[in-house]
Amino acid sequence: MDSKTLEQAILTLAKDQDLLASFRAGPAEVGAGLGLDAEWAGVIAGGDRDRLRSAGLGDALTILVSRWFADDLGDSTSKGAFHVDTTSPLPEPNVPANLVFAAGASHVPDLIARPEIDPEDAVARLMAGYERLRAELAAADPDVLLITADCHFQSFRTGAYVIGTGAVYGGSMEFFKRPDLDLKIDGAPALAQAMVRAVRAEGLEVEESDDFPLDHGQIVPLRLLLPRSDLPVIPIITQPNRSFSPFGARVFGEVLREVIESRDLKVAVLATGGLSHWLDPGKFGKADVEFDTYLLQMLQAGRGTDVANLEPYALLDHGQYEFPNWLIMLGMVGPGVRGEVYAYEPMEASGGGWAVVNMVLPEKTATAEVSGDE
Image (cartoon, rainbow, N blue to C red; front, side, top):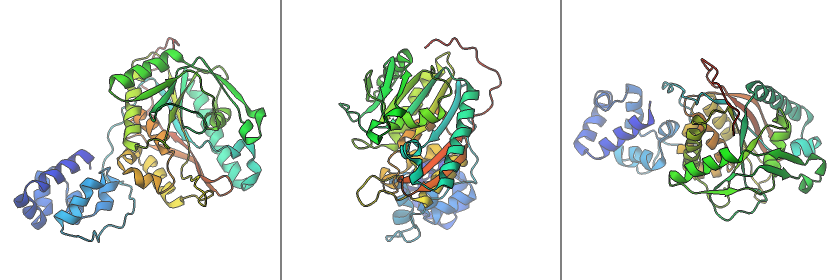
């Protein structure tokens, strides 16, 4: 069921006590007049907040159905479990014709700096996932690659998202005792500046930077996946230690999507980070396999964009502070696109639940002519 339909039905019921009373007496009949099918009318009438969350509704709305509609002051029917809606039809994917690749992958430094600390078989499975993704990226043959990562060691002035507008970038893995893994890449300043202008035109905050060092957030996935050394890359940075908005990350991606659509370039986007990952003292090394599985199932079901409707705490509590990196990518792709999980491995020594996911983009009916102009 479409989240907007559910939202409007709940708000309509909340404003009309007579209608609400009729709805409670006959959910299916009254619900039909509100655009609800019998199943989702029953979900609302039963005060099932967990199911409503699965459809992308925020908690401020869902609590109406238990505490106010059903007079369940103890919220007794809700467990706080996360469900994946597999019954409602997906919207038809509407991916930009020139977005040729989209994926998400972890950027764990130990994977290339000291892989021996984790189980050999788990590392092999994860690396096999990266190899599959590398082949997909090479086959897509993009003109430019966008890569999202969170801020680790760089110093920025704001709490906003950051877009790299430089012509060249360099970075070191010396921090991880592996200066031999240092990396230099080319940027795409013209396209990056266009993205900055588009975000600001929407009234959103963005910081631009033409000179900042790459860190493991870019170096690790690029070393594993970059199909050719001369492919221009635009780094995009989130800053979860200063601001954290899953919804905002998706909107940010949606704005970038509009810029992509306006360009005669084949564009690829790679989200990096997590899944579950804690750096807190006493928590490092843990992986929330249950919640990671929920996120992966949401991606597989084509409902990744709905994760942006969760309250921020729901992600932070499960070690998902890097998932906004993925939500930017999902905002660019749009709803209804399914992800294929190439690998998922919870690794205690390197500190999290690591994943490789390819978004299965619809086949293009015709190959757009591109100029290669950045």
